[in-house]
Length: 217
Image (cartoon, rainbow, N blue to C red):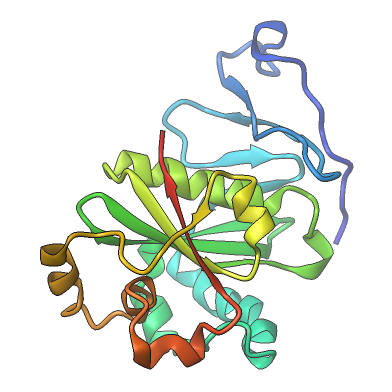
């Protein structure tokens, strides 16, 4: 696969779309911890966001096998729980993927728990694309989608506390919802909700992970 160097573009008021159009230019986050602060563009109304030499876009049903293959090494190392293809297909609308030269290089999903609350889950970037801002771009896209849905808080269960901490997520205690919402969430049957609620029977699956929450601006 041919890889191109990161593209650095001037600020929006110094650059026009090639060909004289009116696309809106934006910067995909600040550079931190050696990651390149890649410049990006998004056409108004477009569902594709260009970040350096890869794109972040909503997943399609044809991506699901690729997502499963992307997750498999982490499943084999018991860092992620495996999911059946039927489960992944049923959640395709929750996923976004990062793609370079037609190859999936990362993925992440947004799952809604409650009126104001959701979870960033199943975040994965292939090893050769680590430290290229891919994870940041995926999380940024999921957070923007969460805002569009009206969510104001996002949960994650993660080993990567530094990564999420730099993005405004902070560790949480045992209960961050009121008793009525808690009782309703108990009925969901969703493993991620049970991890959010820190139920006793899921604790063996969450050892070493940190429960974190971010209030969206």
